[in-house]
Image (cartoon, rainbow, N blue to C red; front, side, top):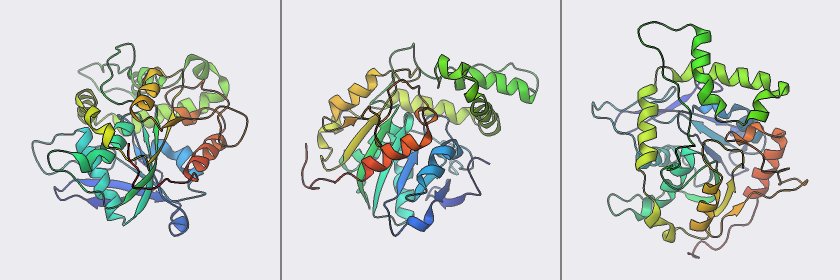
Length: 314
């Protein structure tokens, strides 16, 4: 099982099934939904701690990207996955849910998918008019294009060939990839040992059989090109950047890169108050740092900010 509970399914026109869950459904008529878009290799259940917390205040959509977790590929023998195809999948899913206004939080590769979704109406080939409005976006541990600095990225170990691995061997094989999402201080802190074990179990349970899809996602990140579209992005869409200086997967410089391209985007505030973080001393899996209530305050505070005139553009 890739998520928190039993998923529902949305079937695309090409036969692909997208597994999803809506947490906090009792808030649908009272609060704007938030869509959580996972990164490379992610499964919807990875969001569990944050999603359950946020679902106390609003509907929260979590889902598995095509071919991952409980989602399936299409019926085509020539399946390709790109940042654009993942963005189109997400548009179709939100439209299926009949939500007219959403906020989107994209993590790592999911931030690229989020940006691509916003740019779909401006594509020269097969543009897509969004059947819903996007009022707020959170780009977290994310970037604007291929990762060029080879010192960064997920550390993926190669499995030995020719024999079936034990559960413990699979955990150890997953460890380098997982540990790259945190920093050394977090990893040696004994108060984090249960969370590290939880993550190691998740890595073994959900991802070992889908290495081909993860490889396709990695190629998608390395080939994406969004530069031409930033000048088309409406200023009415508020943007918040969350990025830790200890991020060893996506360098902190990528946060400034986003702000350079989206000049009205802001970095998460530092301070002791609700809606602020104590510091930027956190790694790639940002919501695993500080008390989860800190992130609830940051996200709810941002989503409660006024949206500007939709006709205003860069």
